[in-house]
Each structure stands twice: as structure tokens, then as C-alpha cells.
Length: 393
Image 1 (cartoon, rainbow, N blue to C red):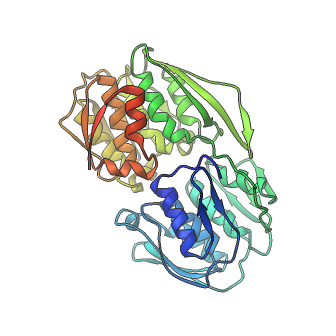
Image 2 (tube, rainbow, N blue to C red):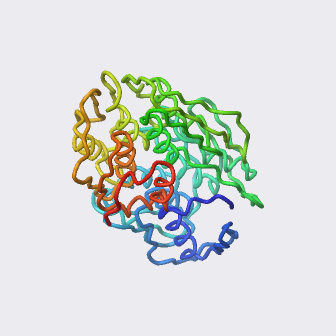
């Protein structure tokens, strides 16, 4: 693989695979993963802070090994029963701790049965875990979602020779064997690019071009909302990399912005970008309304509460609701003494974007958490905008 994000979540996945007996060679510019059998008894696997690592491994490892999937204090608060329950119905032996949280104990043995499963909420991670387990099921496995969600797993499996069928909001997979990809070029993460694009949108006369960004339709909801708010954002010509569309995205700052209400059906396509969009909304006229985003309550932090708190620290008006947030633009923003991330990388990067908007450096406490998804963020941010914030670990 080339272009791999070396954030903490990715590194946690690499360490977990090695602990499971899989050869993962880090060669600097590339990472090589060799196929093989998982250890029959792998002990405790540390997933760090990565819910994605844990949930996908639950699907991959179902029935294939005995191990305990564990993580840090934040990950130990995140719900895993939503993955464990459908995997149990496939015949996997899985136990979660009290409250349905990690550690997750997996048991070796047992054939897997195909299921036709309706997701109670749209979740790409739960869908992916079931599809990955379905590779070893006895027939076609189908997952039905109430709304569209990210489809990277389906695209990757299809590019590796698996029979995948998508019919509206239903995704079906035939059991099968994966064929290795000799060289996978990983496109840029739109959830990382959005912080730079939003900061540029907030800065008069700023111009920015982000190259090689994944523009998978299940990931471009934030860009669509930015345009609907009046941002001058354009997506260039697309090319395909192993089924994933890639393009350059340009933006010009200084446009007049206005608040919008995010349609609840597209929330899954921009769930990680909501804090950044809320930051942009503080600079817009009128109300910016998010509903149907209760999933934010169980991220690295209660992201509804932490987003509202961060915005209020800048002087913005932000109102929490049970499943979302309302931001009223037009308030006079000020530089807070400091912003606490509470271990949530997206809160820290959203605060950095607002620092650019007001043109003042701020202190971001516990900023080391940003390495979860964006290592060397401070270096890239300073190169793009100047010293917009001061690290505080």
C-alpha cells in the first residue's frame, strides 16, 4: 500500500494484525501485508483508541481465533454489542463486558451462517463487520441500512475479486476468497481535508487546492453542505483507484455564508465532519441545524456536547439537542484562553479552523490526540495558514 495514513488508528490496526500472526512490513513509503492464518489463541489485542479497528476485527475474526479485543479508556466506553449481536446470529461466539462495551472476547470454532440483517441505524462499521464475516458464511449474507453509509468495504472487496451486489440500501456478499492487490494507492481522506477547506473558506481572499482526495459519494456530504451554505468549493475531474473516485478540490475564501439544516438522511455521509461544519456555521448568517446525529454521543467524546462547548468558548451560540446541535451565526468571535479536546481529535482540528477564522493563535490542550487521524497536523497546518494554534500536550 502507498499513501497510507500513519495516524494512531492505522498503527493500532497494524499492531493488532501482527499480534494475530499476520506479517505486516513497514517499508517506509509502502506497507506490505501478507496473507496467512490467524493465531488460534492470540491473547489480548490492543486496539488503542480505534473503534474501527475493533469493530472490523470482530467481523474478520468471527469463529477464526480466540482473543480479547481491548483498548484505551475512551474505547472501553464505546458500544460493541451492536456488532456482536448480528455476528452471534451468524454462529460466532462473542462476549462483551457489562453494558455491551469492550473488552470483547472472541472464541475459536463454529461455522458461520449467512444472515439477512436490517441495521437499526446506518453504520458503515457494523455493516462492514457483517460483510467481512460473510466471507466465511455458508451462503449469501445481506445487510440492509435505513440510509446510505460509507461503502469503502464493499468497493475494496469487489476489487479483490469478491462478488458484491448493491441493490438500493441492501448490500449482499457471496462467501469467497480474497485476491491480493499488488499495489494499492490510498486516496486522501476527505475527513482530514475538510478542516483545511473549512479554514480556507473562513479566510477572506484565501485559495486552496487539495489534491488526490477521495470523492466517494458516501463521503462528500460535507462538501455538498459547504456549497449549500455558499462556500465557493469545486470538485475537479475524477479518476478511479481500485473502485474509489479521486479528484482535486479547490476553494476560495470570503464568500457570504448562510446557515442550512442538514437533511437527516445524509448525516451518515458526514458524521465525522459535523464539528468542522459547525465551526464554519458560526461565521454564517442564520441557523445551522443538525438532527439525526445521536451517534455523535458515543464517539471519542460526547461529540455533540464537546462541539457545543468548543463553539461557546469562541463566543458562538450553540444549543445541544438530544440528537444534534443548533448553531446561530453572527456572534462576535473571540480567541479563548485555551480549548480542551478531551481526547477528541476532531474537536482539536475544528478549533484550529476557528483560530484561522478569527486570525489569532489559540492553545489546544491534549492536542496529541490529533495524531489519531492526522499525524504531523501541526506542521501541515502551519505551512498552510501560519501558526494558528499552540500545541499543549
